[in-house]
Length: 155
Image (cartoon, helix red, strand yellow):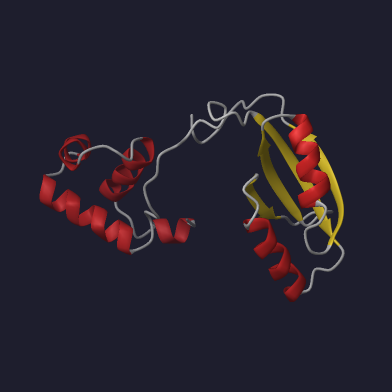
């Protein structure tokens, strides 16, 4: 959200968003209490915030370590071609890889930054060699292995 789009929100809207971001499973009754608003107007505001695109959805945050995927690597990817068709081909292919948790186009000396999650370094090496390097137009990759997550949105 840009600050321009936030300008149309009042203090109660912002508080509702903060509370839902902190606890998406909070009941409307409890949320109403927290933002000092009765239930019906609170429900109406939530619906408007959803319709206006401020609330994109609700989801469970799963612990990947408990699922056996503790290894995180950040991969810089440089493409051999950055014309529209090449970018679209890369984007489509990278979205299909379950090991890629996030993919960001970057304004830098490389084109994309990927967050890749695997069970260990050996599994990562296989993903790098067999999947990432085979993505359309990949010219070069550089890997940075995470030693510890200091701050994460799931926290």
